[in-house]
Image 1 (spheres, helix red, strand yellow):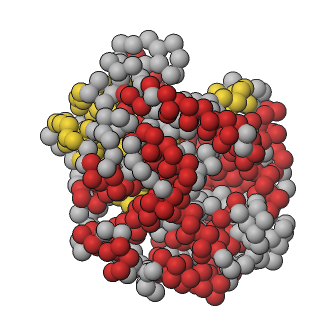
Image 2: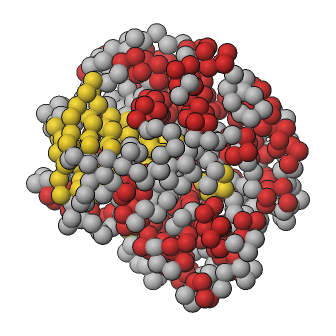
Image 3: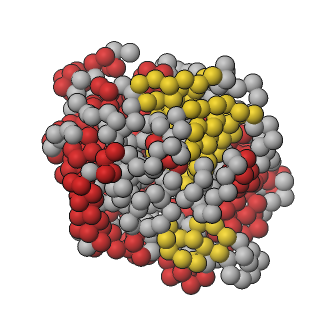
Length: 622
Protein backbone atom coordinates (compact mmCIF):
# COMPACT_ATOMS: atom_id res chain seq x y z
CA UNK A 1 0.00 0.00 0.00
CA UNK A 2 1.02 3.63 -0.46
CA UNK A 3 2.15 5.84 2.38
CA UNK A 4 -0.27 8.76 2.75
CA UNK A 5 1.05 12.01 4.20
CA UNK A 6 4.46 11.45 2.63
CA UNK A 7 3.76 12.57 -0.93
CA UNK A 8 -0.05 12.42 -0.86
CA UNK A 9 -2.03 14.92 1.23
CA UNK A 10 -4.63 12.23 1.88
CA UNK A 11 -7.60 14.56 1.31
CA UNK A 12 -10.16 15.17 -1.43
CA UNK A 13 -12.25 18.36 -1.54
CA UNK A 14 -15.91 17.77 -2.42
CA UNK A 15 -17.89 20.72 -3.79
CA UNK A 16 -21.68 20.74 -4.32
CA UNK A 17 -22.45 23.87 -6.32
CA UNK A 18 -26.21 23.32 -6.19
CA UNK A 19 -26.05 23.75 -2.41
CA UNK A 20 -23.03 26.02 -2.33
CA UNK A 21 -21.35 23.65 0.10
CA UNK A 22 -17.85 22.20 0.45
CA UNK A 23 -16.46 19.40 2.57
CA UNK A 24 -13.38 17.26 2.71
CA UNK A 25 -13.09 13.50 2.70
CA UNK A 26 -10.22 11.07 2.92
CA UNK A 27 -8.50 9.97 -0.24
CA UNK A 28 -9.43 6.37 -1.02
CA UNK A 29 -6.13 4.71 -0.23
CA UNK A 30 -6.93 1.44 -1.98
CA UNK A 31 -7.82 3.29 -5.19
CA UNK A 32 -4.61 5.31 -5.00
CA UNK A 33 -2.66 2.05 -4.70
CA UNK A 34 -4.39 0.56 -7.75
CA UNK A 35 -4.61 3.69 -9.95
CA UNK A 36 -1.83 5.98 -8.57
CA UNK A 37 -3.32 9.46 -9.19
CA UNK A 38 -4.00 11.83 -12.11
CA UNK A 39 -5.61 9.96 -15.00
CA UNK A 40 -6.12 6.63 -13.28
CA UNK A 41 -7.49 7.91 -10.00
CA UNK A 42 -9.56 10.62 -11.70
CA UNK A 43 -11.29 8.14 -13.99
CA UNK A 44 -11.91 5.76 -11.09
CA UNK A 45 -13.72 8.52 -9.20
CA UNK A 46 -15.58 9.51 -12.39
CA UNK A 47 -16.87 5.96 -12.72
CA UNK A 48 -18.52 6.24 -9.31
CA UNK A 49 -19.89 9.75 -9.60
CA UNK A 50 -21.29 9.78 -13.15
CA UNK A 51 -24.14 7.42 -13.91
CA UNK A 52 -24.41 6.01 -17.45
CA UNK A 53 -25.99 8.12 -20.14
CA UNK A 54 -26.13 11.52 -18.45
CA UNK A 55 -25.89 14.70 -20.52
CA UNK A 56 -22.42 16.21 -19.97
CA UNK A 57 -24.10 19.56 -19.28
CA UNK A 58 -26.31 18.03 -16.61
CA UNK A 59 -25.68 19.07 -12.98
CA UNK A 60 -25.04 15.36 -12.40
CA UNK A 61 -21.81 15.49 -14.38
CA UNK A 62 -18.71 16.20 -12.33
CA UNK A 63 -15.39 17.92 -12.87
CA UNK A 64 -12.50 16.20 -11.15
CA UNK A 65 -9.14 17.89 -10.66
CA UNK A 66 -6.66 15.19 -9.68
CA UNK A 67 -2.97 15.61 -8.95
CA UNK A 68 -0.42 12.80 -8.70
CA UNK A 69 1.73 11.64 -5.79
CA UNK A 70 4.76 13.53 -7.15
CA UNK A 71 2.90 16.80 -7.80
CA UNK A 72 4.39 19.48 -5.59
CA UNK A 73 7.61 17.60 -5.01
CA UNK A 74 10.95 18.88 -6.28
CA UNK A 75 11.01 16.09 -8.86
CA UNK A 76 11.22 17.78 -12.25
CA UNK A 77 8.18 17.98 -14.59
CA UNK A 78 5.66 16.72 -12.01
CA UNK A 79 3.50 19.84 -11.58
CA UNK A 80 0.68 18.35 -13.63
CA UNK A 81 -3.00 17.76 -12.98
CA UNK A 82 -5.70 15.72 -14.70
CA UNK A 83 -8.97 17.53 -15.44
CA UNK A 84 -11.51 14.70 -15.72
CA UNK A 85 -15.15 14.81 -16.80
CA UNK A 86 -17.59 13.39 -19.32
CA UNK A 87 -16.91 15.29 -22.52
CA UNK A 88 -19.64 17.44 -24.09
CA UNK A 89 -17.79 17.20 -27.41
CA UNK A 90 -17.30 13.44 -27.73
CA UNK A 91 -19.52 11.90 -25.04
CA UNK A 92 -16.54 9.84 -23.90
CA UNK A 93 -14.62 10.33 -20.71
CA UNK A 94 -12.22 13.24 -21.00
CA UNK A 95 -8.96 13.65 -19.09
CA UNK A 96 -7.13 16.79 -20.08
CA UNK A 97 -3.86 17.92 -18.50
CA UNK A 98 -2.64 21.25 -17.20
CA UNK A 99 0.73 22.30 -15.83
CA UNK A 100 2.21 25.49 -14.44
CA UNK A 101 2.03 26.25 -10.73
CA UNK A 102 -1.64 25.52 -9.99
CA UNK A 103 -1.27 21.73 -9.54
CA UNK A 104 1.53 22.13 -7.00
CA UNK A 105 -0.36 24.95 -5.25
CA UNK A 106 -3.42 22.71 -4.86
CA UNK A 107 -1.24 20.20 -3.02
CA UNK A 108 0.25 22.98 -0.88
CA UNK A 109 -3.32 24.06 -0.06
CA UNK A 110 -3.89 20.59 1.36
CA UNK A 111 -5.73 18.55 -1.27
CA UNK A 112 -4.83 15.78 -3.70
CA UNK A 113 -7.95 16.45 -5.72
CA UNK A 114 -11.23 18.32 -6.07
CA UNK A 115 -14.57 16.84 -7.14
CA UNK A 116 -17.15 19.41 -8.27
CA UNK A 117 -20.80 18.51 -8.81
CA UNK A 118 -24.12 20.31 -9.19
CA UNK A 119 -24.92 23.67 -10.74
CA UNK A 120 -24.91 27.02 -9.02
CA UNK A 121 -27.98 29.24 -9.59
CA UNK A 122 -25.62 32.18 -10.17
CA UNK A 123 -22.01 32.68 -11.29
CA UNK A 124 -19.54 31.65 -8.58
CA UNK A 125 -15.89 30.84 -8.07
CA UNK A 126 -14.24 28.42 -5.68
CA UNK A 127 -11.56 29.77 -3.34
CA UNK A 128 -9.26 27.17 -1.75
CA UNK A 129 -6.72 28.23 0.86
CA UNK A 130 -4.79 26.30 3.50
CA UNK A 131 -7.14 23.35 3.76
CA UNK A 132 -10.35 25.37 3.63
CA UNK A 133 -12.68 26.17 0.72
CA UNK A 134 -15.47 28.63 0.04
CA UNK A 135 -17.90 29.21 -2.83
CA UNK A 136 -17.98 32.93 -3.62
CA UNK A 137 -19.99 35.20 -5.92
CA UNK A 138 -18.51 35.71 -9.39
CA UNK A 139 -21.20 37.86 -11.00
CA UNK A 140 -18.64 40.63 -11.52
CA UNK A 141 -16.40 38.21 -13.43
CA UNK A 142 -18.98 36.71 -15.78
CA UNK A 143 -18.40 37.75 -19.37
CA UNK A 144 -14.77 38.65 -18.83
CA UNK A 145 -11.84 37.04 -20.60
CA UNK A 146 -9.27 34.75 -19.07
CA UNK A 147 -6.60 37.43 -18.67
CA UNK A 148 -8.79 39.99 -16.88
CA UNK A 149 -10.44 37.35 -14.70
CA UNK A 150 -7.08 36.03 -13.54
CA UNK A 151 -5.78 39.50 -12.72
CA UNK A 152 -8.93 40.46 -10.82
CA UNK A 153 -8.90 37.33 -8.66
CA UNK A 154 -5.24 37.78 -7.79
CA UNK A 155 -5.99 41.39 -6.86
CA UNK A 156 -9.02 40.40 -4.77
CA UNK A 157 -6.89 37.95 -2.80
CA UNK A 158 -5.23 40.88 -1.09
CA UNK A 159 -1.78 39.60 -1.95
CA UNK A 160 0.65 41.54 -4.10
CA UNK A 161 2.77 38.88 -5.79
CA UNK A 162 5.97 40.18 -7.34
CA UNK A 163 6.14 37.26 -9.78
CA UNK A 164 3.75 34.66 -11.18
CA UNK A 165 5.31 32.04 -8.89
CA UNK A 166 3.95 33.95 -5.87
CA UNK A 167 0.37 34.48 -4.72
CA UNK A 168 -2.79 32.51 -5.50
CA UNK A 169 -2.96 30.35 -8.60
CA UNK A 170 -6.04 30.75 -10.76
CA UNK A 171 -7.90 28.39 -13.07
CA UNK A 172 -10.77 29.97 -14.99
CA UNK A 173 -12.92 29.89 -18.09
CA UNK A 174 -13.46 32.62 -20.66
CA UNK A 175 -16.62 33.48 -22.62
CA UNK A 176 -16.28 30.18 -24.55
CA UNK A 177 -16.84 28.18 -21.39
CA UNK A 178 -19.67 30.43 -20.25
CA UNK A 179 -21.40 29.91 -23.60
CA UNK A 180 -20.80 26.15 -23.49
CA UNK A 181 -18.67 25.98 -26.61
CA UNK A 182 -18.10 22.24 -26.72
CA UNK A 183 -14.31 22.54 -26.97
CA UNK A 184 -13.88 25.29 -24.37
CA UNK A 185 -10.80 24.96 -22.18
CA UNK A 186 -9.86 25.78 -18.60
CA UNK A 187 -6.98 28.26 -18.41
CA UNK A 188 -4.58 28.05 -15.49
CA UNK A 189 -2.58 31.19 -14.75
CA UNK A 190 -3.46 32.52 -18.20
CA UNK A 191 -1.33 30.24 -20.39
CA UNK A 192 -1.57 26.66 -19.10
CA UNK A 193 -4.59 24.91 -20.52
CA UNK A 194 -6.67 21.84 -19.91
CA UNK A 195 -7.43 22.15 -23.57
CA UNK A 196 -9.15 19.27 -25.28
CA UNK A 197 -12.58 17.72 -24.76
CA UNK A 198 -14.59 20.69 -23.49
CA UNK A 199 -13.95 20.63 -19.74
CA UNK A 200 -14.28 24.43 -19.77
CA UNK A 201 -17.80 24.06 -21.20
CA UNK A 202 -18.77 21.71 -18.36
CA UNK A 203 -17.40 24.29 -15.92
CA UNK A 204 -19.51 26.96 -17.61
CA UNK A 205 -22.61 24.76 -17.46
CA UNK A 206 -22.16 24.71 -13.69
CA UNK A 207 -21.89 28.53 -13.54
CA UNK A 208 -18.41 28.07 -12.12
CA UNK A 209 -16.20 30.85 -13.43
CA UNK A 210 -12.94 30.11 -11.64
CA UNK A 211 -10.99 28.22 -9.01
CA UNK A 212 -8.33 29.81 -6.83
CA UNK A 213 -5.75 27.76 -4.92
CA UNK A 214 -3.34 29.01 -2.27
CA UNK A 215 -1.15 27.31 0.31
CA UNK A 216 0.68 29.50 2.83
CA UNK A 217 0.84 27.53 6.08
CA UNK A 218 2.84 24.73 4.57
CA UNK A 219 6.38 25.59 3.56
CA UNK A 220 5.64 24.76 -0.07
CA UNK A 221 7.32 21.44 0.54
CA UNK A 222 5.85 18.00 1.04
CA UNK A 223 7.67 15.88 3.60
CA UNK A 224 9.33 13.75 0.93
CA UNK A 225 11.21 16.84 -0.28
CA UNK A 226 13.37 16.81 2.85
CA UNK A 227 14.48 13.21 2.40
CA UNK A 228 18.14 12.97 1.35
CA UNK A 229 17.67 9.83 -0.76
CA UNK A 230 14.82 11.47 -2.70
CA UNK A 231 16.79 14.66 -3.34
CA UNK A 232 19.76 12.66 -4.57
CA UNK A 233 17.53 10.72 -6.96
CA UNK A 234 16.02 13.94 -8.30
CA UNK A 235 19.49 15.38 -8.96
CA UNK A 236 20.52 12.20 -10.76
CA UNK A 237 17.41 12.25 -12.96
CA UNK A 238 17.97 15.90 -13.87
CA UNK A 239 21.55 15.12 -14.84
CA UNK A 240 21.15 11.82 -16.70
CA UNK A 241 17.56 11.77 -17.93
CA UNK A 242 17.26 15.46 -18.79
CA UNK A 243 20.56 17.36 -19.17
CA UNK A 244 22.55 14.52 -20.75
CA UNK A 245 19.65 13.02 -22.69
CA UNK A 246 19.80 13.97 -26.42
CA UNK A 247 16.03 13.37 -26.72
CA UNK A 248 15.45 16.33 -24.37
CA UNK A 249 17.77 18.77 -26.12
CA UNK A 250 15.25 20.38 -28.45
CA UNK A 251 12.69 20.84 -25.65
CA UNK A 252 15.32 22.44 -23.41
CA UNK A 253 16.54 24.82 -26.14
CA UNK A 254 13.46 25.38 -28.28
CA UNK A 255 10.28 23.66 -27.10
CA UNK A 256 7.65 22.04 -29.32
CA UNK A 257 7.99 24.45 -32.32
CA UNK A 258 10.94 22.29 -33.42
CA UNK A 259 8.38 19.70 -34.58
CA UNK A 260 7.24 21.93 -37.46
CA UNK A 261 10.35 21.07 -39.50
CA UNK A 262 10.04 17.37 -38.63
CA UNK A 263 6.42 17.22 -39.80
CA UNK A 264 7.17 19.21 -42.95
CA UNK A 265 10.09 16.93 -43.79
CA UNK A 266 7.94 13.83 -43.31
CA UNK A 267 5.16 15.26 -45.47
CA UNK A 268 2.54 15.13 -42.73
CA UNK A 269 2.16 18.79 -41.67
CA UNK A 270 -1.60 19.52 -41.90
CA UNK A 271 -2.18 22.05 -44.67
CA UNK A 272 -5.48 23.45 -46.02
CA UNK A 273 -7.64 21.19 -43.85
CA UNK A 274 -5.36 18.19 -44.45
CA UNK A 275 -5.57 18.51 -48.23
CA UNK A 276 -1.76 18.37 -48.19
CA UNK A 277 1.05 17.44 -45.81
CA UNK A 278 3.43 20.10 -47.11
CA UNK A 279 3.20 23.84 -46.44
CA UNK A 280 5.30 25.83 -48.88
CA UNK A 281 5.91 28.56 -46.32
CA UNK A 282 6.66 26.31 -43.35
CA UNK A 283 9.91 28.21 -42.77
CA UNK A 284 7.79 31.23 -41.84
CA UNK A 285 6.07 29.43 -38.92
CA UNK A 286 8.83 27.16 -37.59
CA UNK A 287 11.11 27.56 -34.59
CA UNK A 288 13.57 29.77 -36.46
CA UNK A 289 10.77 32.14 -37.44
CA UNK A 290 9.49 32.25 -33.88
CA UNK A 291 12.89 33.00 -32.36
CA UNK A 292 13.60 35.58 -35.05
CA UNK A 293 10.32 37.46 -34.84
CA UNK A 294 8.47 36.93 -31.54
CA UNK A 295 10.36 34.99 -28.84
CA UNK A 296 11.54 37.15 -25.96
CA UNK A 297 13.07 34.34 -23.97
CA UNK A 298 12.93 30.57 -23.62
CA UNK A 299 12.09 29.74 -20.02
CA UNK A 300 10.39 27.47 -17.51
CA UNK A 301 6.92 28.35 -16.28
CA UNK A 302 6.07 25.18 -14.35
CA UNK A 303 6.88 24.50 -10.74
CA UNK A 304 10.26 22.81 -10.20
CA UNK A 305 10.93 22.09 -13.89
CA UNK A 306 14.43 21.55 -15.27
CA UNK A 307 13.37 21.33 -18.92
CA UNK A 308 11.87 24.76 -19.41
CA UNK A 309 10.03 24.22 -22.70
CA UNK A 310 8.03 27.45 -22.73
CA UNK A 311 8.55 30.51 -24.91
CA UNK A 312 7.64 33.97 -23.68
CA UNK A 313 6.72 35.97 -26.75
CA UNK A 314 6.04 39.50 -27.97
CA UNK A 315 5.23 40.78 -31.44
CA UNK A 316 7.98 43.21 -32.31
CA UNK A 317 6.45 45.01 -35.29
CA UNK A 318 3.45 45.26 -37.58
CA UNK A 319 -0.25 45.45 -36.80
CA UNK A 320 -0.01 43.48 -33.55
CA UNK A 321 3.15 45.15 -32.26
CA UNK A 322 3.69 44.75 -28.49
CA UNK A 323 1.20 41.88 -28.18
CA UNK A 324 2.61 39.66 -25.42
CA UNK A 325 1.96 36.07 -24.49
CA UNK A 326 3.34 32.53 -24.42
CA UNK A 327 3.81 30.08 -27.25
CA UNK A 328 2.46 29.19 -29.75
CA UNK A 329 3.21 25.47 -29.31
CA UNK A 330 3.56 23.05 -32.24
CA UNK A 331 -0.11 22.04 -32.36
CA UNK A 332 -1.13 25.69 -32.63
CA UNK A 333 1.51 26.41 -35.28
CA UNK A 334 0.17 23.47 -37.29
CA UNK A 335 -3.58 23.80 -36.79
CA UNK A 336 -3.70 27.61 -36.76
CA UNK A 337 -0.86 28.10 -39.22
CA UNK A 338 -0.35 25.63 -42.05
CA UNK A 339 -3.83 24.10 -41.66
CA UNK A 340 -5.45 27.44 -42.49
CA UNK A 341 -2.57 28.66 -44.69
CA UNK A 342 -1.34 31.43 -42.42
CA UNK A 343 2.36 32.08 -42.96
CA UNK A 344 2.74 35.10 -40.68
CA UNK A 345 3.90 34.06 -37.21
CA UNK A 346 2.50 37.33 -35.81
CA UNK A 347 -1.00 36.48 -37.01
CA UNK A 348 -0.72 33.00 -35.51
CA UNK A 349 0.33 34.55 -32.19
CA UNK A 350 -2.67 36.90 -32.31
CA UNK A 351 -4.95 33.93 -33.04
CA UNK A 352 -3.35 32.03 -30.16
CA UNK A 353 -3.85 34.89 -27.70
CA UNK A 354 -7.46 35.36 -28.82
CA UNK A 355 -8.10 31.68 -28.16
CA UNK A 356 -6.34 31.94 -24.81
CA UNK A 357 -8.37 34.92 -23.63
CA UNK A 358 -11.64 33.43 -24.89
CA UNK A 359 -10.76 30.07 -23.32
CA UNK A 360 -10.68 27.90 -26.47
CA UNK A 361 -8.75 24.78 -27.40
CA UNK A 362 -6.50 25.91 -30.26
CA UNK A 363 -6.41 22.45 -31.86
CA UNK A 364 -10.17 22.17 -32.31
CA UNK A 365 -10.52 25.88 -33.10
CA UNK A 366 -7.80 25.78 -35.74
CA UNK A 367 -9.19 22.61 -37.24
CA UNK A 368 -12.72 24.03 -37.46
CA UNK A 369 -11.43 27.17 -39.15
CA UNK A 370 -9.69 25.03 -41.78
CA UNK A 371 -12.79 22.90 -42.31
CA UNK A 372 -15.01 25.97 -42.70
CA UNK A 373 -12.53 27.49 -45.16
CA UNK A 374 -12.53 24.40 -47.35
CA UNK A 375 -16.34 24.41 -47.34
CA UNK A 376 -16.34 28.10 -48.28
CA UNK A 377 -13.96 27.55 -51.18
CA UNK A 378 -16.08 24.61 -52.37
CA UNK A 379 -19.26 26.72 -52.19
CA UNK A 380 -20.84 24.62 -49.44
CA UNK A 381 -20.69 27.66 -47.16
CA UNK A 382 -21.42 31.04 -48.72
CA UNK A 383 -21.36 34.71 -47.71
CA UNK A 384 -24.93 34.26 -46.55
CA UNK A 385 -24.02 31.68 -43.89
CA UNK A 386 -20.89 33.58 -42.85
CA UNK A 387 -22.48 37.07 -42.65
CA UNK A 388 -20.11 38.30 -45.32
CA UNK A 389 -16.95 36.94 -43.71
CA UNK A 390 -14.66 35.64 -46.46
CA UNK A 391 -13.50 32.30 -45.12
CA UNK A 392 -10.70 31.83 -47.59
CA UNK A 393 -7.48 30.06 -46.70
CA UNK A 394 -4.86 32.60 -45.73
CA UNK A 395 -7.33 35.39 -44.94
CA UNK A 396 -5.78 36.76 -41.76
CA UNK A 397 -8.73 39.09 -41.06
CA UNK A 398 -11.13 36.15 -40.94
CA UNK A 399 -8.69 34.03 -38.94
CA UNK A 400 -8.33 36.60 -36.18
CA UNK A 401 -12.09 37.21 -36.06
CA UNK A 402 -13.19 33.57 -35.73
CA UNK A 403 -12.14 32.73 -32.14
CA UNK A 404 -14.30 35.53 -30.71
CA UNK A 405 -17.24 34.66 -32.98
CA UNK A 406 -17.01 31.04 -31.82
CA UNK A 407 -16.65 31.96 -28.13
CA UNK A 408 -19.63 34.33 -28.25
CA UNK A 409 -21.62 31.98 -30.53
CA UNK A 410 -22.24 34.68 -33.12
CA UNK A 411 -23.14 33.89 -36.73
CA UNK A 412 -21.08 31.07 -38.21
CA UNK A 413 -19.31 30.89 -34.84
CA UNK A 414 -22.44 29.41 -33.29
CA UNK A 415 -22.36 26.52 -35.78
CA UNK A 416 -18.64 25.90 -35.31
CA UNK A 417 -18.97 26.08 -31.51
CA UNK A 418 -20.69 22.69 -31.60
CA UNK A 419 -17.57 20.93 -32.93
CA UNK A 420 -17.07 19.54 -36.42
CA UNK A 421 -19.21 16.39 -36.05
CA UNK A 422 -22.32 18.33 -35.01
CA UNK A 423 -21.52 21.27 -37.29
CA UNK A 424 -21.35 18.95 -40.31
CA UNK A 425 -24.83 17.64 -39.54
CA UNK A 426 -26.10 21.21 -39.34
CA UNK A 427 -24.43 22.34 -42.56
CA UNK A 428 -25.16 19.15 -44.53
CA UNK A 429 -24.40 19.28 -48.27
CA UNK A 430 -21.83 16.48 -47.97
CA UNK A 431 -19.75 18.58 -45.55
CA UNK A 432 -19.16 15.40 -43.48
CA UNK A 433 -16.86 14.25 -46.30
CA UNK A 434 -14.30 16.87 -45.24
CA UNK A 435 -14.71 16.57 -41.44
CA UNK A 436 -11.74 14.89 -39.76
CA UNK A 437 -12.53 13.63 -36.27
CA UNK A 438 -12.85 10.52 -34.13
CA UNK A 439 -15.81 10.30 -31.78
CA UNK A 440 -16.36 14.02 -32.35
CA UNK A 441 -12.87 15.16 -31.30
CA UNK A 442 -11.10 16.94 -34.15
CA UNK A 443 -7.81 15.70 -35.61
CA UNK A 444 -4.62 17.22 -34.18
CA UNK A 445 -1.40 18.12 -36.01
CA UNK A 446 -0.14 14.88 -37.63
CA UNK A 447 -1.56 13.56 -40.90
CA UNK A 448 -1.84 9.74 -40.62
CA UNK A 449 -1.20 9.27 -44.34
CA UNK A 450 2.41 10.09 -43.48
CA UNK A 451 2.45 7.92 -40.33
CA UNK A 452 0.02 4.98 -40.51
CA UNK A 453 0.32 4.28 -36.79
CA UNK A 454 -1.28 7.63 -35.98
CA UNK A 455 -4.48 6.54 -37.74
CA UNK A 456 -4.76 3.72 -35.21
CA UNK A 457 -3.63 5.94 -32.32
CA UNK A 458 -6.34 8.50 -33.09
CA UNK A 459 -9.00 5.86 -33.63
CA UNK A 460 -8.43 4.00 -30.37
CA UNK A 461 -7.64 6.93 -28.07
CA UNK A 462 -10.07 6.97 -25.17
CA UNK A 463 -11.31 10.53 -25.74
CA UNK A 464 -11.30 10.63 -29.55
CA UNK A 465 -8.58 11.77 -31.96
CA UNK A 466 -5.66 12.41 -29.64
CA UNK A 467 -1.89 12.44 -30.09
CA UNK A 468 -0.99 12.20 -26.40
CA UNK A 469 -2.28 8.68 -25.74
CA UNK A 470 0.16 7.17 -28.22
CA UNK A 471 2.70 8.88 -30.47
CA UNK A 472 3.87 6.33 -33.08
CA UNK A 473 4.94 9.19 -35.37
CA UNK A 474 7.97 9.56 -33.07
CA UNK A 475 9.02 6.01 -33.93
CA UNK A 476 8.17 5.83 -37.63
CA UNK A 477 8.03 9.12 -39.59
CA UNK A 478 10.39 10.81 -37.12
CA UNK A 479 12.29 7.64 -36.27
CA UNK A 480 13.63 4.50 -37.87
CA UNK A 481 10.48 2.48 -38.61
CA UNK A 482 8.59 2.38 -41.90
CA UNK A 483 5.72 4.89 -41.57
CA UNK A 484 3.81 3.49 -44.56
CA UNK A 485 3.01 0.00 -43.34
CA UNK A 486 0.44 -1.35 -40.87
CA UNK A 487 2.95 -3.96 -39.70
CA UNK A 488 3.82 -3.67 -36.03
CA UNK A 489 1.73 -0.54 -35.45
CA UNK A 490 -0.85 -2.23 -33.21
CA UNK A 491 1.85 -3.35 -30.78
CA UNK A 492 3.47 0.09 -30.91
CA UNK A 493 0.22 1.90 -30.14
CA UNK A 494 -0.79 -0.51 -27.37
CA UNK A 495 2.55 -0.24 -25.58
CA UNK A 496 2.52 3.55 -25.77
CA UNK A 497 -1.01 3.67 -24.37
CA UNK A 498 0.06 1.55 -21.40
CA UNK A 499 3.09 3.78 -20.80
CA UNK A 500 1.18 7.05 -21.06
CA UNK A 501 -1.55 5.73 -18.76
CA UNK A 502 1.11 5.37 -16.07
CA UNK A 503 2.81 8.65 -16.96
CA UNK A 504 -0.42 10.69 -16.80
CA UNK A 505 -1.26 9.05 -13.48
CA UNK A 506 2.09 9.71 -11.80
CA UNK A 507 1.61 12.64 -13.12
CA UNK A 508 4.63 13.34 -15.30
CA UNK A 509 5.03 15.87 -18.10
CA UNK A 510 5.01 14.56 -21.65
CA UNK A 511 8.43 16.12 -22.20
CA UNK A 512 10.28 13.86 -19.78
CA UNK A 513 11.17 10.65 -21.61
CA UNK A 514 9.13 8.53 -19.23
CA UNK A 515 9.71 4.80 -18.83
CA UNK A 516 8.46 2.29 -16.31
CA UNK A 517 11.78 2.03 -14.54
CA UNK A 518 11.99 5.79 -13.97
CA UNK A 519 8.39 5.93 -12.73
CA UNK A 520 8.98 2.98 -10.41
CA UNK A 521 12.08 4.58 -8.86
CA UNK A 522 10.27 7.84 -8.18
CA UNK A 523 7.10 6.24 -6.81
CA UNK A 524 9.03 3.85 -4.57
CA UNK A 525 11.03 6.71 -3.12
CA UNK A 526 8.05 9.02 -2.64
CA UNK A 527 5.40 6.54 -1.51
CA UNK A 528 7.42 3.67 0.02
CA UNK A 529 5.98 1.26 -2.54
CA UNK A 530 7.82 -1.63 -4.17
CA UNK A 531 6.86 -1.11 -7.79
CA UNK A 532 8.66 -2.82 -10.64
CA UNK A 533 8.35 -2.32 -14.37
CA UNK A 534 5.92 -5.24 -14.44
CA UNK A 535 3.65 -3.93 -11.65
CA UNK A 536 3.44 -0.55 -13.37
CA UNK A 537 2.68 -2.18 -16.70
CA UNK A 538 -0.22 -3.96 -15.00
CA UNK A 539 -1.47 -0.67 -13.57
CA UNK A 540 -1.21 0.93 -17.02
CA UNK A 541 -3.27 -1.91 -18.51
CA UNK A 542 -5.81 -1.56 -15.70
CA UNK A 543 -6.22 2.17 -16.26
CA UNK A 544 -6.54 1.90 -20.06
CA UNK A 545 -9.01 -0.97 -19.77
CA UNK A 546 -11.06 0.93 -17.18
CA UNK A 547 -11.29 3.87 -19.60
CA UNK A 548 -12.44 1.48 -22.31
CA UNK A 549 -15.12 0.05 -20.02
CA UNK A 550 -16.37 3.57 -19.24
CA UNK A 551 -16.79 4.34 -22.93
CA UNK A 552 -18.46 0.98 -23.61
CA UNK A 553 -20.87 1.84 -20.80
CA UNK A 554 -21.65 5.05 -22.72
CA UNK A 555 -22.45 3.12 -25.89
CA UNK A 556 -19.15 3.18 -27.81
CA UNK A 557 -17.88 0.19 -29.79
CA UNK A 558 -15.74 -0.71 -32.80
CA UNK A 559 -17.79 1.45 -35.14
CA UNK A 560 -16.51 4.49 -33.23
CA UNK A 561 -12.83 3.47 -33.50
CA UNK A 562 -12.88 5.02 -36.92
CA UNK A 563 -10.95 6.88 -39.60
CA UNK A 564 -12.42 9.80 -41.59
CA UNK A 565 -12.88 9.40 -45.38
CA UNK A 566 -10.08 11.75 -46.42
CA UNK A 567 -7.49 9.36 -44.99
CA UNK A 568 -8.43 6.52 -47.36
CA UNK A 569 -9.93 8.42 -50.31
CA UNK A 570 -7.54 11.32 -50.93
CA UNK A 571 -3.86 10.58 -51.62
CA UNK A 572 -1.44 13.20 -50.38
CA UNK A 573 -0.42 15.28 -53.41
CA UNK A 574 3.19 16.10 -52.55
CA UNK A 575 6.11 15.67 -50.20
CA UNK A 576 7.65 12.55 -48.67
CA UNK A 577 4.23 10.91 -48.34
CA UNK A 578 3.11 11.78 -51.87
CA UNK A 579 0.46 9.40 -53.18
CA UNK A 580 -0.16 7.80 -49.78
CA UNK A 581 -3.50 6.89 -48.23
CA UNK A 582 -4.34 4.62 -45.31
CA UNK A 583 -6.45 1.95 -46.98
CA UNK A 584 -9.56 0.75 -45.18
CA UNK A 585 -8.20 -2.78 -45.39
CA UNK A 586 -4.95 -1.84 -43.66
CA UNK A 587 -6.79 0.22 -41.09
CA UNK A 588 -9.24 -2.53 -40.16
CA UNK A 589 -6.36 -4.97 -40.03
CA UNK A 590 -4.56 -2.74 -37.51
CA UNK A 591 -7.71 -2.40 -35.40
CA UNK A 592 -8.29 -6.17 -35.31
CA UNK A 593 -4.66 -6.81 -34.41
CA UNK A 594 -4.84 -4.15 -31.71
CA UNK A 595 -7.96 -5.74 -30.20
CA UNK A 596 -6.28 -9.15 -30.25
CA UNK A 597 -3.24 -7.83 -28.40
CA UNK A 598 -5.49 -6.32 -25.73
CA UNK A 599 -7.57 -9.53 -25.54
CA UNK A 600 -10.72 -7.69 -26.63
CA UNK A 601 -13.35 -9.19 -28.91
CA UNK A 602 -14.01 -7.96 -32.45
CA UNK A 603 -16.33 -5.25 -31.13
CA UNK A 604 -13.60 -3.97 -28.82
CA UNK A 605 -14.99 -5.33 -25.57
CA UNK A 606 -12.40 -6.66 -23.06
CA UNK A 607 -12.64 -10.37 -22.29
CA UNK A 608 -13.84 -11.59 -18.92
CA UNK A 609 -10.41 -13.10 -18.28
CA UNK A 610 -8.70 -9.74 -18.82
CA UNK A 611 -11.25 -7.91 -16.69
CA UNK A 612 -10.83 -10.41 -13.87
CA UNK A 613 -7.05 -10.39 -14.14
CA UNK A 614 -6.98 -6.59 -13.81
CA UNK A 615 -9.47 -6.54 -10.93
CA UNK A 616 -12.15 -4.59 -12.81
CA UNK A 617 -15.08 -7.01 -12.58
CA UNK A 618 -17.07 -4.66 -10.35
CA UNK A 619 -16.85 -1.87 -12.94
CA UNK A 620 -17.56 -4.09 -15.94
CA UNK A 621 -20.86 -5.17 -14.39
CA UNK A 622 -22.21 -1.62 -14.11
